[in-house]
Image (cartoon, rainbow, N blue to C red; front, top):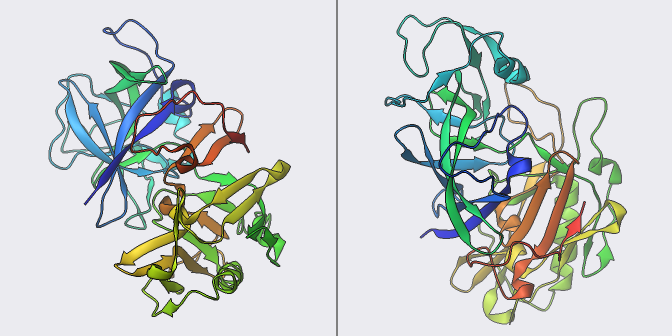
Length: 368
């Protein structure tokens, strides 16, 4: 069973990097923000966004990958649109594609969307297949709803949105990877003894650091960090009966011995201490996972030791990857221009959640 919530995008942040926005008529106004409904797929734990694209408009379901390179749309089953524009080699749009642009396309089966001569060929990385995906860089129109911060408003038509007309399933790009400056971790206000060099990105091989990911269902921690978190969390709940672990988790409890609060199960809070001493607090609703009736597990996963990429084996170059379960019901605002993250911690404290309509203009947020 899937649940739905809303994904808020401020237009001056969303339409950056390699996409080129302009508002078509109608409507004739420029909104302050747009709103995209999102559902979570129960089987894959992935987040699905719904938009309309092309002329005439076609409804699309897109998997959200917060760290993706670019918006990817499958063109395998035919792509029909009178506003489709392939991006020609040497164009400004093609040049801004940067490292995901690999060559100038030469296609003998075209011309058609996804297959045109003298177009920019791109190969963005697909985190779900763990492979790069080939395709043609192109532009087309999309339609999404505006918002005034309180209510869903008029549908907005946006021209020239850049995307990869590729040959795999849909993946939506919002920006490159989002790294944040975690400095320490506390459980029940007790700082864990950790190798703090893991929190910084190594200049030698690029390992370390903390990023936010919507493609990871649960937060993964480098092994030494994981063991410290699990060990301290287990001590804090020493009086609660343990039960057999349920993969991919290693610490599970009899939930009948755990109370319920406004912010979920009554368990120790986990604090991610950021730069400037801002704190992202993870409460029970985000730290615990109900795996079956009577069983709650700590929703963190051992990400293994850090090592640099080897193309023949899986790798884990990031010390902490904050996953989808820990992000849910936390309002995040990404300021790409200023490289800042605004966050609220759990909205459940305010007796609301991302499943409900709420006031998006609240100032109750911290900035990282």
